[in-house]
Length: 88
Image (tube, rainbow, N blue to C red):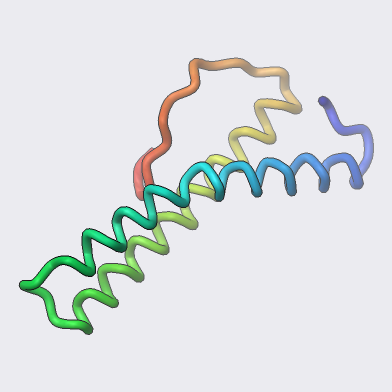
């Protein structure tokens, strides 16, 4: 769907945002669980690492949302490649 007004664009961005965050959340949960199991880190170090995971999650989600919305508007198609938190 190519939006023809701001409401349609807002709806497209909102739907893409929900889908993207839901898609990437399991990876974030796994990273947090792995970090919490690391016995060689202090609690402060664990929190620092979790903060980095969260920043990577938000960055990855934001990038994916922008790409998906622009691809929809421009009619671009590409092979669906897995998105990794903190990756491209």
